[in-house]
Length: 237
Image (cartoon, rainbow, N blue to C red):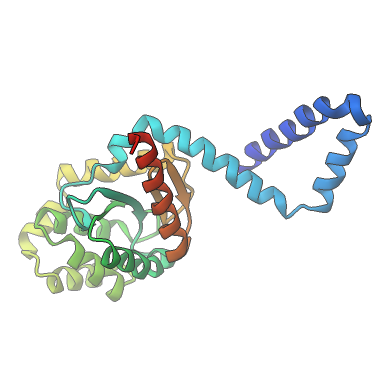
């Protein structure tokens, strides 16, 4: 995917830009190539920008589905006017590190609604993802989410320990974890992640922005601020 994007980007740079300025210098193409060769560190950033642009375009087709949570799989204000979507995995160390950032944002803004999409891509994490959704069905998603990251990595033993710590009805949770609604949700999250071009966890959506990776508190705060500005501009406020 990245290789394809890089090829497309370079074609644009060397083709369009070179053709547009050739009549003025006769050397534009060579100079552009030389500049890129001398500054190769710019290419990953440019490719990432192009990939984010394409992901944002894909988001327009699935936005409603992305921001609509599995019932109960929310952190913060379930009726909040500001939405941050996180694709997460309990065996992902960067997701665990991001939990503190998410909790800080929620504590600071009573209007923030964090929609968590369980995307189990690491070995051994599907059982935890299923139990998290079972916890959501009992109205105890946040408690399980916190406990699972703290007790992890995800194993049958730590999943049960987190479920009991969160106060789940264990017998009901076991049945719900393998139910059709949970299986459908996991399949949906996989499909959405693929449509948005995500390559790993954590991954985020807010406003028109699609963000891959652990960008930290400052990165998420800035993205939410930009999403709020976009919404205000669109509403004409």
